[in-house]
Length: 632
Image 1 (spheres, rainbow, N blue to C red):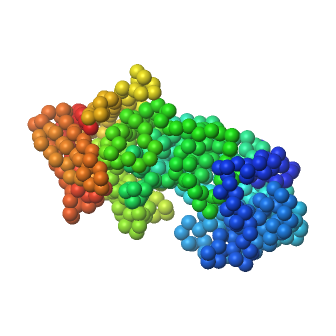
Image 2 (image 1 turned 30 degrees about the vertical axis):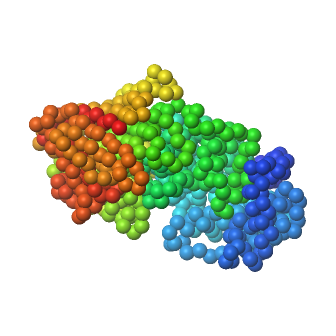
Image 3 (image 1 turned 180 degrees about the vertical axis):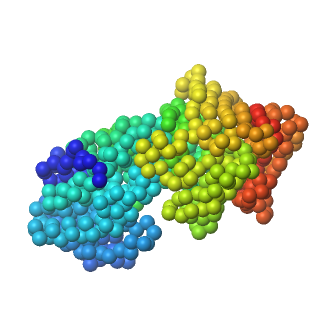
């Protein structure tokens, strides 16, 4: 069991999400023009009868009891407070199937809502009723995936790193601390011992390793812990660089409203005319806490209307004193440093959906650490967008054929073969790494020539595990952009990713150079230079370039276009090294080869999102220098 936390809840009420000193500001907040719609919906929730809640056509009971408790704490509405108490006592008795997928999220949300009632309506609840509520809080806690006491799962990735401890157990523990200190003591003990150190390790990079889908989801969970602990009186438990993670999804936003893909994501499945939304409170919570005007501007862009599940929390966290500013004021290049090592370079900013926009976006990834779970084996990869997704991350995360425990996920989507990086094929590699272990399952490994799974695929558990169990896979050697820091003409990144591979590679260094040509007709150029030294000269090497539509190859020149769905971008790739006699550029894709995966390397270089084409460059020499120039 973790050590007891230094900070404990104060001896006053309320203390979960708000303190007495916050109440006047909340009363004033409901008069703000931007809060009127939220407040009207909360009032509507509060008027829902006890028997109507959660029935067809009515809001869920957790939203109703929260709204009633809010009316009590703001206006002293005793009738609303008593109804909130009655609903909490009834809802806490609910039974759940602990084997239902992701049920911990529903259980935790119920616990948190009832904890708000316990804390805010405390003087309306008898000692006997408090005892009953605590019994059910403990019962529900035992159904959570993290266990109770909360000792199971990873503190770095996975479900246990999300809401159940970072929000639900912490929040409930604060509410019931005087009667039962164990829930807060156990949860906060692990939180400070494990959750905080691993996040303070990667926050300074400004990049969440779990990608554009799960990364934003877990970042929102982290922000709950920030708000809960700060409002309790403990201050910000995290390094202030937590704020910078929010820039990740601003910089990777494409002009068509989508995001450059990262990790387990299904974002290309959105309709072509739909603007991808992160999880509803990411930018509201981060922008309000850190007084970040760009984040609040992005919040309004993504969510003009807050979903029911988040209305109550949006009202609590929104900071009306923070102005908004356009992201067009931000520098066009941003370096996401150690321990990540990614650079995003843009030629412009777009605030809506414009498939005809001339903005070019390039992602240059070294990727210093691998955390597993929803992160991919993509060290050294790159992506390019110009009037369409051109050099892409391939694969999909959706449904029974592409979900987390699917062959597509384990044998293609997560692996190097689905990314614009390099494969080196050692025919004996499976002898060193015969299996993948994840989620309590053991998967036979395949030999596709890609990067190794740290810890045989098992997720990283905590910071000590990350630093000691081979999760480091690369190192940035140099980075620069300029000369104008706001509109740089060049953006440069170089790194060593030898450690991302097994002993089949002695050295792999990759350099990226993005040039903003500031020319409407030819807006950018992108140079990739590699030096790969294999352990044996006969290990085959494959240089991967994924595209949506089939590439057209003419000697050392490869042309990739986007002509579907209203896009009309083009990418020209000129391969300068190795020399033409040592090049073999082959398009592989089309019917029958959709995301195909086989132990035969010639069958494993596969197409991308719509399964139509991929360029492959191979050389049998021990040292493979490669230089490719891309122009848009």
